[in-house]
Image (cartoon, rainbow, N blue to C red; front, side, top):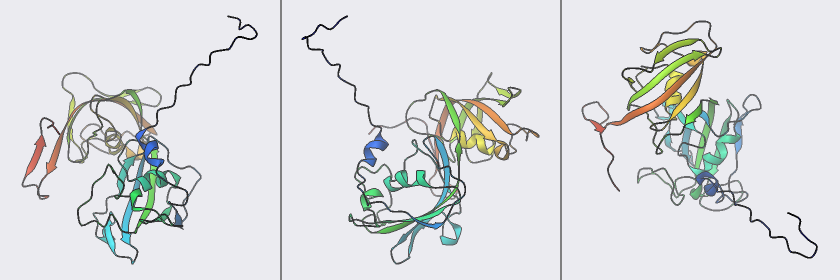
Length: 281
């Protein structure tokens, strides 16, 4: 249709992009409120991005050096690194912004503070944030200045989503999981097919599936269907399948049928709680 001279052309309103929850949270960060001091430089040039699985050690200290909590065994932790999926896992705001800037092998220490001052970060950027998705014990000094020392161990792509799942919860140790699973080489050769009869049942964290496959399933929600790409070094021995020699990468297609939340209530195996149905509230 021709717009005649003198006629006003009606403008079409542009739809505003809907911000994700993470993007809304990042709007709370003001210039100079998050600083990063590199203790040990990393390697390469790539940094993790949304959808990547990141593995890192974290030690939280007070400003006078007292350890509050740590994943490192030498600092009183269990020695097990934190595993998160960027853009999906719940993270404190400071790490949500800071972890994607890190290189593999890099050690960085970011100071956290309750005031907006140079080289420091407000407690609202860690567990003092209003509506923080993570909780800590009452004894945790969430209103104090703290140092979060992070060592980036590894990060990698984990999957391609075919069908979205439901909810936000993903299986983790020691959840009980049921899934349809098939596996192929990157050239398309079929290695494994567990897609008929009963879904494959396993307990998360018991090495009952290859390590890389378990990492990928740990990013999925109930009902999700996805392809998980597992490099050779993560196709570890398991009851599901033997180690495949001469294959650089295995492509697993998974449909996460169901999982049950399992908790070791006392921490010693004497009292195990299995959640059969979700509660309300």
